Amino acid sequence: MARTSSIVLAGLLAGALTLTGCSRGETDGPQEQSSPVAAETPAANSPTTSAQPDARPADFTDEAKGIVAEMDDTALAGAVIMGSYDGTDAAAGAKLIRNDKLAGVIVMPYNLPQDVDRQTLRTMTDQFRTASGERGWQTMIGVDQEGGPVTRAGSAAVELPPLMAHGAADDPALTSQITALQGRDLIELGFTTDFAPVADVTVGKGDPAISVRSAGDDPQRVSSVVEAAVTGYDEAGIISSLKHFPGHGALTEDSHETLPVSQKSLDELADRDFVPFADAAEAGVATSMMVGHIALPGDETLPASLNPKAYQALREDVGFEGLIVTDALNMGAVTAGSPGQETVKALAAGADLALLPPDSAAAAEAVRTALGDGTLKRADLEESATRVVAAQLWQTATAGDAGDDAGKSEDDQRQQLAVAALTVMNGECRFAEPVDEVSVTGSDLGVKAFTEAAKEAGLNVTDGAETTVALVPGPLLGSETVKQAKARNSKKADVAVALSGPWELDGYESGTQLAIYDDWQPGMTAVARYLTGDLEATGSLPVKVEGVNPPDCS
Image (cartoon, rainbow, N blue to C red; front, side):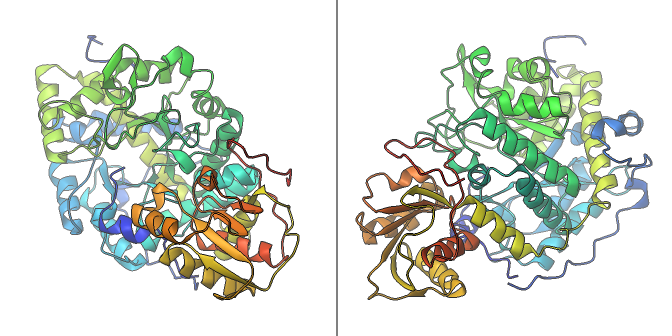
């Protein structure tokens, strides 16, 4: 299949968003494309520990300890940083890894050329892989590839929807199947780590940052989806990361831009927002968890990513013993003085891996200085580095054993999810009066995508059709997309389709209202097939929407 990006991707590639132990500082103590051939991992970077069935990162702790024990200050400081670089020249990232002995780098949209292809992306990650030399463990190569609006690997990767589509499908086995597909796809592209899934419990319309990235507003449903997603990533052999502890889904501000302050204390967050994290920790499926930039009552100017109390809660209250990574330290919520100090403060607070500091070289230097002056204790950094190295050893050992898709094509699996997620908010589970033609309004890209999907489903799109369809995007799909759709859509269209949050249909009087949670092609095809009477919708609304009482189609 052609690995096409979602509608939002064009804008993201041009100017994208840049989207974590207890306290330490206070104590002494279309057609499928074939995958390029993988670059050889130096033999010295392959784990010596055998990957047994159901192996976990903790099983590689002893080997990791031996590697960390041989690290000098430069290697130890670098082992707890995943850096980034500006521009599209991968040599800059490789230089960071070599010079400062970083754990690895995260690839962001600004590192990719427009419409990047698989070969180009794999060539980039191969440079990172070989840059670490023979150090006993492979370079960590990360990406934010949630699906939907957060798809940082660009057009090279398989297109998938955000987690709310999985919440609507409410099928754990299918979710595991899809995230295993995604994990294998990313491994083929050279990645070892995917900073997904989102484990936040959203409040829906009032949540600008998480929104459809969450599986829903019910902690138990979110927990079920997240555990299934991580199970799939584990099956593929890629490091995943539940985010954003202690919970970003109830906040009304975006930590990419400012520091949101939770109205709830850690104790109060435990009953709702901690649930997906705690359940995953208890199930033993999480390879890592991410601490977000969320201020807490009493610490209104300090993000959780720099707050020892948050790490203590994750370790002691949630019971997570694995790798903790910060959210991206270059985000607007983090202000911590001179370059590199944000990294030192995060590590002192309890993070094992500092992600995307604003200046990676300065961060490495600051950690070396902190080691020298005692601000950071060597024993603490060795403990963190051991978790980092053990996770990567696990990934290297298990990725090669990942199975395939049980005979199903990539397209078939994606369409299966799209059909399962199709949700009727208003109307009938099976379209009452099937049609063979419709007229469609929305953004330019939305109408184009739907027209292509409709053709595949045998539905004609023509301006003169009696049945009208309005495609309704949300803010995460881009301001220009929303602007175009608002100018063209009628709130009295016969059929309204939410391409993002289902609350975007507020004010529409359409007799049939559908939600597909994203602008992805398989979702459009599912809508077209529903309109022709070819399928019955079975998705269930994973968030409460004021004034909406959906039929029970599950």
